[in-house]
Length: 263
Image (spheres, rainbow, N blue to C red):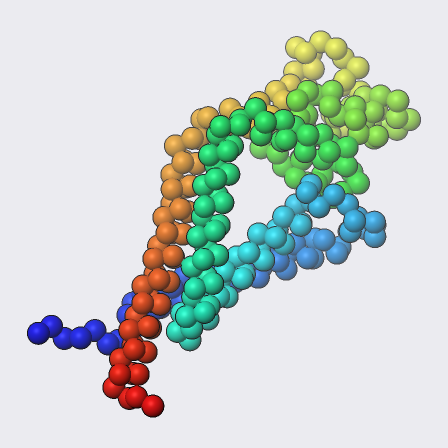
């Protein structure tokens, strides 16, 4: 007769524990960075700005989710707590199916997704210079993807500083992050939109718009992105399986104790 299984798997227990310690710490770090960025705004009214276009707020939300998941999985595994492990497993399963649903929806409704992205870019462009986080984000995107503007270079006319009716030196210009690397300086984009010839503009700034540049990047890196998505999904499935396996072991151990040592 085979020996009755009576112990919790230490391998599963500590794999789940250390796996979640990592996410717990990363989540806490993201929350700290997000809160620091959020409360270090120069203007108090920035706290009430559009949170949907605030990278600091996004960091706080993602960090909070990772922190809660990491905490419940870490403590649940260490203390062999079925309630925390069940919460971890269900929460992770919900996130997994939400990601899957969003991925399918984004693929099916690509045009709608593009419209939403363009709208958010327009909002971000309007707030450029007023929100330091957004300014850094937009500059990073334009430099990384070698692009300028959301749907058109002239999108920058929506910003009060770069609007052609602005009395400042930046009027009818674009941010320095639109400038080509070999001629980049803080003033290279000044008055460039007064030049209507795309070819002449292209000698100084990037004329590819960011929506198209990002779409091209996604197409060129589809295999890497797909591989990363599959990798994340597998980690989530493993986390759910480990949590359920550990819960099963704990229940069996409790049942054995109740049978061998009845009250």
